[in-house]
Image 1 (spheres, rainbow over the protein chains, first blue to last red):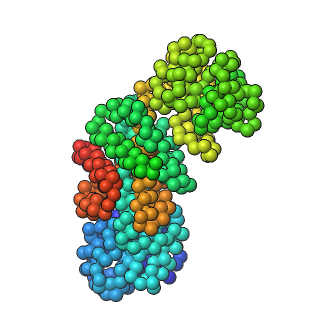
Image 2: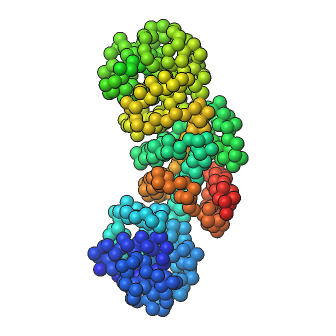
Length: 254
Length: 254
């Protein structure tokens, strides 16, 4: 049985709590957050504390808290030499205070408050200072997901930058598509199947091979018509920058 | 029974041919392409021609040919006052020569040569000069898909620009994510679930409400760390332009 103490009350903490409570080989023995809030209506009030000095003995302490709070909270823990991990995609492992053994337990997914999370499809990026701690994190991870990856802090930083491109920036392109549609009385749902296909394709195809469109075809006529069509300065600039980026990437290969 | 003559031999022509041949209320009575190639191994050779003057009488002539060829091929058709439609997302209906009745039958999806196409999930954008022709296109469309939309040439142009953003440009962001991963020995598959979730989200959520990440949070610390991390000039420029675009869009709303 892995005894876990979970710190935090945000989306990740709540989803992790629910998922870990369903595992027979894991017990969430205590939760901490500043307000002392329950993470689930069924949670017993006495298992939640808002006082770090009340933290009980556990195998793993999971800091599912905001990036900025990791350094401070970890340095205020009232014990030493225990395994303390954070769940952040962008904070180096060494940000955790050295009084304890450090690790990372990072589920790579976007979490929405109201949407149930199926952890079994979510990749976990694991990191620890020694093999024994790494194996314990793996043992915890495998109760939730089959997709466990050993990722260093440096790699996790690269992964986080990639995630900004494929998630945050991609969503902004969807939002531009949505704006252009609504400006022209077109239901955005017309584009949903294309968006789904674009995302599905990369599961079986390298994105370089999946690249299509006027930029890679060097179709100046269409590119110029599109640029002329766009009246919004920011949209126009993005169209030109992305077109240039595609042409410079594939131009090099020709 | 709708009698169709299909012109062209590319991806769209081939997928449309296969799909239309499976419909009981449609008959593809002839195909034309410059090489006189069969569109399917089972097609009878005598139903294919490479000579426009040999085209037989039909209810609809579908020009599933390259954008640049639409004007020329349509002006060389050896008949008048018949319904001639193209399948292009970016060519105005009026590019078809005026000697015939014009229309558009545009399936909005990316087609790969080797991947079977399920037309039932694909939106068709229809346009015609009069109601009778429009209804005939609708009758043809409904044999393939339930998603039929009346879209003018001007709207189709807007839709095409949107499609470049949500498909071509999005795929380029995937390709950057892939490049950053392989430069750091990270398997790109770690990002597949995030990519799928990003695309799935917009089916139930306006992309403006789904926007997350350091740009919209105004998280300068993370943005600066990411920009410092990116050594490729084009990737750096894209990161900055997209971050600025997100901040200018949501900054206005605050």
